[in-house]
Image (tube, rainbow, N blue to C red; front, side):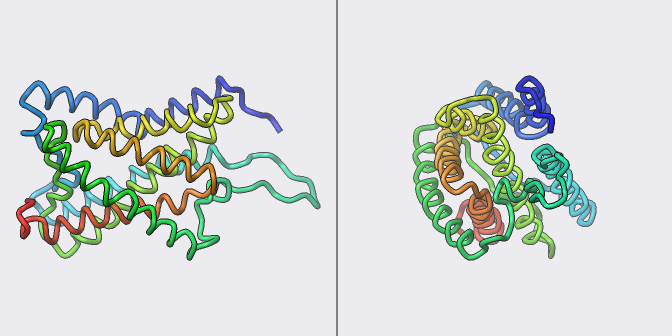
Length: 258
């Protein structure tokens, strides 16, 4: 079996990030600078799920297309992580990318419980960090959803939350930690870079979300190194986003958050 060189793997990583979250990080930095040079961050807003058309079914179409195409880099990563070696009769076959990442339903009950615990561990302090960031003027007002109220709004927000969870956890944790290990990096360095990247593509929301997501990245990456399963991270991330997106869509304006 031919083992890819470190140079080839580095190029692979740059391509993956350039097509996905690395691109998002660059845009996020530019958007942050744009907001800071217009007005104080405390006066800015960050909308996470926007309506893309005033026509209901065109808006639905755009939302679904966004979700589908955002997941293409995940397919690319799964392809890169798939063992391409040929096996001989009698040998165990190569592990799939899903097995390598623990991105499967091999232990649904345990993954769900771990995901619920992680969501509580991260979600409750995040509310305090957001409030502190707003008070300090380093965080924009975050609007989790600005979609119009249609029959499909809640299902689309749930799909959007799952999209973010799969994209971020598979690439930023599972894939990058695998590649960083092959680069010969120490685990603390790999976790630090992964976590800073996670924070950087949230910078458009301000410095508070950057810090909060970087800390979340450390916790998630550390847990992954212990379990070698990305599924509990996907569950936790999806739950956090579902609560934020759907909760705001249904109750945000009623409680004065809209």
